[in-house]
Image 1: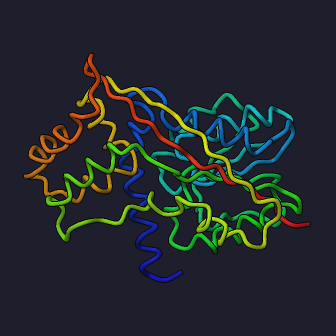
Image 2: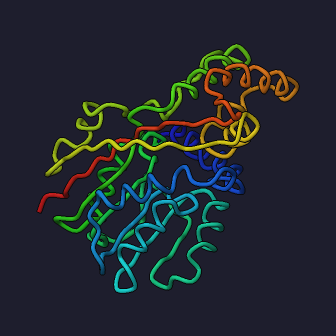
Length: 271
């Protein structure tokens, strides 16, 4: 790993650590339904040993724990201490579930340790996804399953807000990691030597009470990386600009719905 890769990884981990207090905690569930869908598509059976990389506060891990049950084991790793602290609290009563600080790009476990490796909205944040997939293959048993999610299509409102805020960003437009791997071709190129590669798209709708709620939610996840680039003395201006960009999406009662399509990719480690 290059120095720039290490710096990028540390930056992402720090950003999510700052987000951890409110991640998936402001407006009900955004990530949890996606986590449940990922686990369902992964076909995890009771007694399975499952690794959730980049587990955050446990959107995927909780669903994996329910699928494996007490006869199995679910392990979550993340580089953000705040995420790990909160995920650990959420699964404290489940003795077959554990969480620890760990690198989603290079999980430190023995070969063939797991029946399944899960990665919920993580792959596009990794500096070298191809190396991460090689690491997942190593820790999977032969015939084990890899399952991960990427965005197939985010709500146009998010892009409209980012575009409206771009003039306030020093250095101009920013490349958003979430825009990587939105199509099957780029994902398939990473999985050329895996078996039974399959794709499915599921769409989720998330309600927000209004503009204030949506703005606060922006600070609770990866979009925070965009907002933190805006000079502090221009944040009030940024908020006003963002609210204007939200106008077309506001419903009759002032609420806003986000419609998000997620691609679930599954593959089998060759025997």
